Image (cartoon, rainbow, N blue to C red; front, side):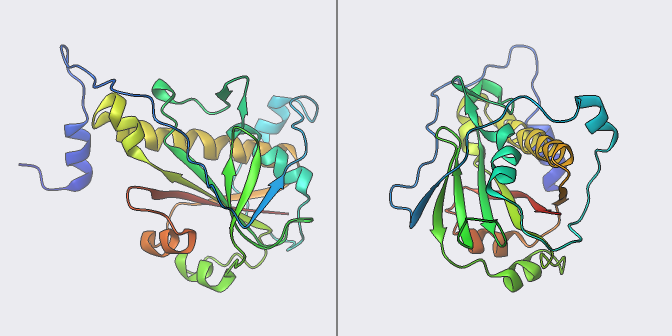
Length: 228
């Protein structure tokens, strides 16, 4: 029996001819009933900006260097790929299970109180969960990668059981893919806006989960440092 967890995962999640998928139910999106604050975001601007291929030519991870704030309009556009539009989100999701959740740690965002927020894609809003940003604790959680110059941290988390309900163990693979799709599109949006975005994939999982207050069954996927 294979003991390496990564290899075991890929072996168990393979599909073979004749395999059936559970396809039991379509899960519901996560909603916080009693946030500390509800922050409405400016209307989305789906058009305008530099041509796509010019933006792609400059697409690369970049750590924030200036240490300046970003605007609420900037933040709204950065979250465009995650928003629900016409009943679907901008990020592909197998079976529309949407195992992805997004949290924002606001450090220096104009018009937004510092703290931890959950992003609600259906209404394109931020729900404040905590008034503490805890920059030093985040630096420790990110293996010493300091968020000092970042204006915000965007944390993409995974709830694989949503995909597993439809696709069995292979749903774990789809959840990871969706996090990759979303992170790439956020980086693309940042380049188009002239902002810096850096995906930090290496972190202490339990520390990030604790800082966000994640429940059991929800796992950190990637932390994206945003700024200028």
